[in-house]
Image 1 (cartoon, rainbow, N blue to C red):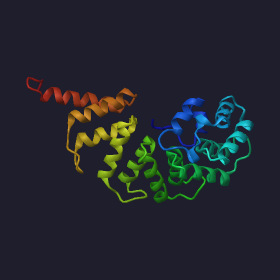
Image 2: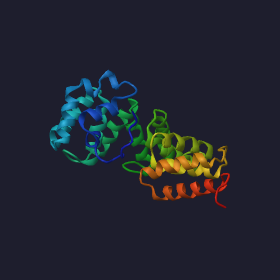
Image 3: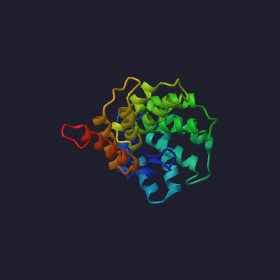
Length: 238
């Protein structure tokens, strides 16, 4: 399972219902100290309280579970502190607990921590530090991190510019269902170069995938390539 929700759009509890949050953020590597949301009633209660709007209770419960090493609770507690939910905003503590979740190998925490440095939110902007955290998350299949990493390689931001690496991570993100990555991957195949063979059929398939998610420009590209293929086919309209 791949997590691909927004970074600072509240907590993981705000993204999903309790079981979905547990499944997403406890999947993959084992949770810190072997504690998962599924086996930790306090974290489950905190998620339920958060979803019910009982933010004061959720904050306390997330903190208690975070102290015991539950990485979902560490992440959620960090987000509540950074967003000032259930109490006053506490950037220092929020960063500390977010780093704990990231160090516990939680891919979404790694992505959020990287985005913090990439955007300069709550910390001094540091694209190189962001790159390292995006890479950690991307290697675990985190789609947004894959896209962020691809953008960095394409722009030469926080790392050496490398179009081959950019394509590699755009394609990974596209395969994970990211609409923007699907469009960009289609563009790589349409034009070719940097080790990518030009392939109109493959480009068309990626544009179709992006168009199916509502990308209107991708739909136009799909239609244009479809017309090209039709004209170039034996007996096609010239």
